[in-house]
Length: 212
Image (cartoon, rainbow, N blue to C red; front, side, top):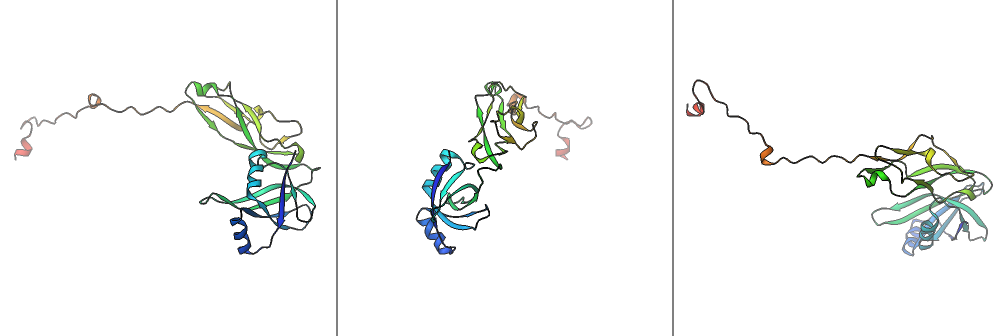
């Protein structure tokens, strides 16, 4: 089931964008689908709730100011990393009857046996590209790692892909692996340090050069 967001029309003035952000709204744009681009703004709190509950790859029903809903997906989000806030968002219209390409996260299920043995879990690919109808987009793709030992890996072919979803990766692409723990360097103790032998002049004896 798609999430719903209410959008309001805005103008393209820089001052308007700043004012909207100060009011807790995110300026954005809706485009694609053979229709005109629309400048909009949405409530930031509502958007964050959708992202938490549905993820960024979900289909969103955007309620536009003209009363016509639009099925969209998030195409791009611009963020101010210093202030930790969203600056702008792009929505792209989607046809619910046509397959689209998007990315979804991989969710690891269980604790790898190799990690229990002291190994290190290496997450190689956290998201995978898929192709399917918008109504078939999963929240995530599960990967069960409980039987993974040190030196072993799991690939795209080990993912549990839902029906109607095509993965746009090679089947042997590694998703996760468990590597052996790195050996810590052993600190030398005074007893381990080998003293350099004193060089003795066979003719003059030790320390004669300093006496000259």
